[in-house]
Length: 476
Ligand code: SAH
Ligand code: SF4
Ligand code: F3S
Image (cartoon, rainbow, N blue to C red):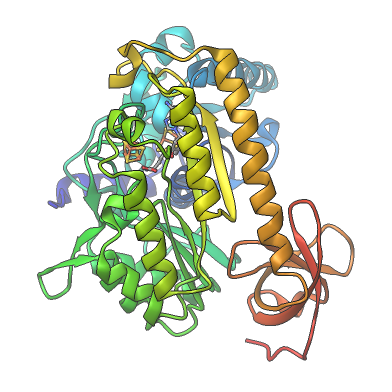
């Protein structure tokens, strides 16, 4: 990966110079984030790069000098949802202008990448459109928009990596969080028949190991105890190592596990094809690697998996799960499913239900296939009727819900180590997470935040667990 130093210094200079009203005065920044965890991470990083310009987060868009809508393009009506939200934000922008206050309105993320020009055409009051690969240029774009008084669009896939431009000194947006996301890999070359991601996020690219470790250390120094490594295909990670060699995700996990104070490591989203032996062994060897894996399978039918271009069969997936459970017997799995992919018959759907029955999932996300223009499946014959998709989705979700309840119930009467992340809804109540990503509530005090304590789980609620601390927890 090359680093463009000219662009780097320009970006930094801009962030420090009071260009056209962009000074260091305190400014409100309102961030709206849709989509996957990578967008959550990107929103945090956009907040970081804007901080040197004086922008600090505010909850209410009416108090914001800048609003960023970070969008997702994964399923249909994505663009319509963006335009309806922009209509709402336009009203706020007009009201503020009537009071003599300007609002910079930016659209970021995957819809911006795919439909940037459209957005500027249909919503000319938008000031900035930026794709997921250019958020490090935001300070420069803000300055340009202020100078030009017009709109700025940047949906390049630049040669320089945005990660090289993250502020090293500014208080990271993750400060105060116990759990944080860290993007290590981005983009996708797999071109599943149904999916827009290869077009919105570009080709697969991994961050160098030193850059990941440095960010992880900064996060831990700021109080983070759990890091979830992110990537569209995170287990395809192949970053440049400090030794000049290529490191896979397993090797990265071993290195992260050495960081004192980093109690828990997770990663998502994994592709079954990239689940190599080294990573399976890491699950056996590393207690910090949590026993919960999101491993989307999409379908249990071999012919649909083939049509989807997933590159494995249903039995390959079953065998993989067996090997993972052999390595880490308490490993729980979650997955994604699509019903109604073009060509899916009743038999194909039954095969998916069988796979779910065989594997047993702790959690799952399931979707009706949604036509994405420009993807291979969009033009495929044998599109499945909406009513059939509805029926299949209902049956699938009922089975998955049953499995989820069973899994959550299986933890009751057991002691689980819980990493406390903050206050619960009721006074005197604290909330944390089990190793299996379940929310756990206990009575306790703020001192618990950031510590891992053993909790006796007593109750399964609809989407969480409750329990009580079984011993005084040593404070971190
Ligand atoms: N990289 C991940 C998935 C990223 S997209 C993987 O390979 O598994 C997240 C999920 O959205 C997918 O797993 C899929 O279940 C769902 N999805 C993606 N495109 C979709 C579409 N066109 N219609 C319905 N669901 C879709
Ligand atoms: Fe989309 Fe497939 Fe890539 Fe996942 S692996 S991001 S589903 S193309
Ligand atoms: Fe959505 Fe883009 Fe993530 S399309 S799911 S925000 S990669």
